[in-house]
Length: 158
Image 1 (cartoon, helix red, strand yellow):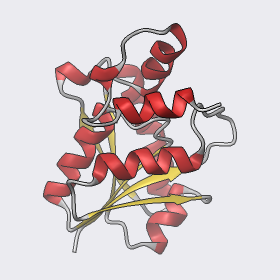
Image 2 (cartoon, one colour):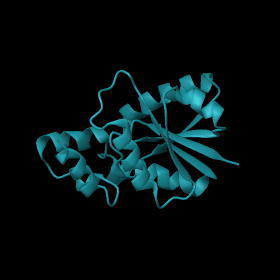
Image 3 (cartoon, one colour):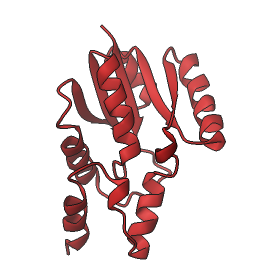
């Protein structure tokens, strides 16, 4: 059985994330879309909000399990029988960073697959989405289907 984990902060989930989830759902028996907490990051959305948005985005994929874990990616992978981590790369900087992380995880017994982003997704990132939210710019084309209204509702909360 092939088990793939797509780790991330998903702050929030984007079309780029969904592209990886879609791919993984076609090649693996089980896919974990797993939210991990980086203590060095400040998040725009709460963990519960990120989980809800990710769950909504993953509804079309019956073999995808949305989870969060407070530990390390490698520990999660070992505990859950993960065959491969799957990470997307949009550019050279992403590749260099993800290669370094892959080397670290390999030293911990977990292999990583790096998947180049489709050209139309190379500018899609959670950082760009948050920037657009902050600037009041249009952001819908960066989101998976059906999430724009949910994001707007979260932003309008007092």
